[in-house]
Length: 252
Image (cartoon, rainbow, N blue to C red; front, side, top):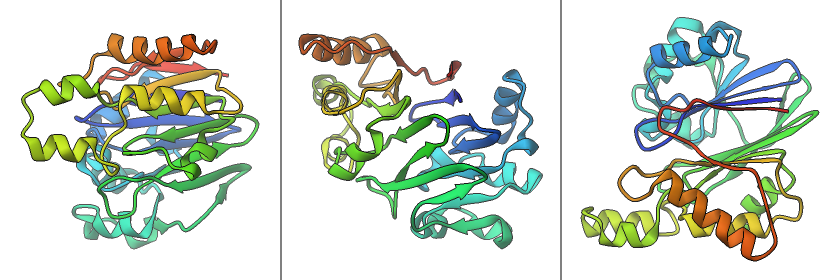
């Protein structure tokens, strides 16, 4: 299994997962040109992708979707609520848009979408499983039981650690935006990510802390907060904070 972070943060998100010969792009929140360039750096051409999985319709997850799919005619898989609310979705070919309602397979790889609590139409995360397992859980205000089940046992986990609550409260965001981020339909804080990891029955071999706020977090702060909480309870994991420009990769 290969997991490559192409971009992560409020300006754009995209993750490449290759497992058992299946090539998937999760979200296309950066330009199609940048996606192509990033994939090429890993020796992958966009036309070799088997599908694009979309977590939700916010622009930082779909910015390059239309151009990418029009150029390469890639299948797009997302919940009905997401498909119906993607900006300019009408310009995408109906044959390329596929609504998902539960677990499905692409080749020998099983993909389990799971509901996330976020202020979008019908957001979800994805558990991708074959000879190894990767789970992506970002853009969620709370870790529900179903999310906890979905992340448990993943070999590679991409988990949101969006903000430091104190930085957010003291920062310059208007209060309505702060309230949205802190809500159960907002974004996960560093300490909340740590406790989700603590509750796992089987810990991952690699954890990527993702979707870090550039205004209300720092890569080192996110890493140290999660690391310190885990260490205090005798848990040591391989943790890495994702940067906006991506560049991180794990091969298992």
